[in-house]
Length: 113
Length: 116
Image (cartoon, rainbow over all chains, first blue to last red; front, side, top):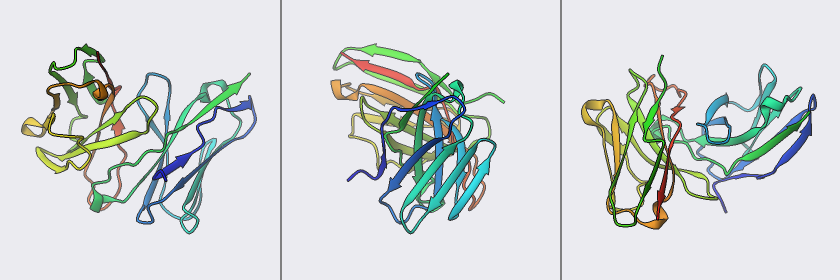
């Protein structure tokens, strides 16, 4: 079992629709959860972080965390072609573990005009 | 503020040769991380520096890999001798130290290493 599981996609959504990305993790010691966006050939860019159970909204992005189910998700509302990228889920165990990130394989999102 | 900079962006070397990758973190960032993504796999942690000290090198594949961070500034990752399975994209990331708080890790563009 992988430490962080993501559907590789591609997840194809029409422009203006909601893209829903899911991530499950196996390490119950995970404290913080990050979503990175990576365009092809570029560096991962942090778009969301979430630390507590529930929802966190930032612009068109909403992250949802359920620690009991070891599940974290990312919703992208009003999807734009510029949102087409690979989205990486990355939990970490906090400062005691050096804040090192454990990445999933990523979900490729394609937003079609 | 300049971002995390990595050199070179691409490197193609023959099996058995030596390659040195360099990372310049964001100024003032005490934490420096090396990660690697091999073809078809997830990005994996290699090691973590706090200033000039190696905090965690549990992800280093073997003793052919040597990382240094001179004076707590830039870092180098040397692979000697390189093997075919070392091919991949090597990312460097840096972050501030804010006590117990988690801080955002900023990533460099990566170095694509191809061993032939």
